[in-house]
Length: 182
Image (tube, rainbow, N blue to C red; front, side):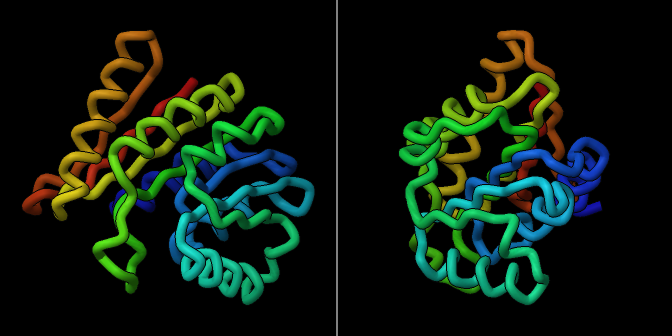
């Protein structure tokens, strides 16, 4: 089972119509569409990405699926936006780190801003909420980012949070998924 499938299966069992969810790294919009389907017409999704191309790709995918009315798209740094924005308690927040598939591989999420964004995200989760983070240590910036996320998750475990870690073993430098539940 792919890591994305694990995230989607976990959240499909948790999210309900009317929920509020955040895709902190919209990318090409796959997770954003999934979240919009799960929260239904009465729910809402906030999708953030620092790249205008990612926001455009996500918008196109949402329009094609007829889901655009459920989603607010924001072109911004996820750490800065999550810090400044106070919303209703969030049922689920997803981070799919790294670079935009099909985009410039030199433009990646960064360890420092990701760590800050995770801290802000944790403060916004409602009781029973999920924080799902997938990191990709197969590229240089991804190694540092995965190490930083691992340390951040270890600190959450020490603070009493429930954290699962999934990592395929059949690859060199495989992606890593952490699922934190409040």
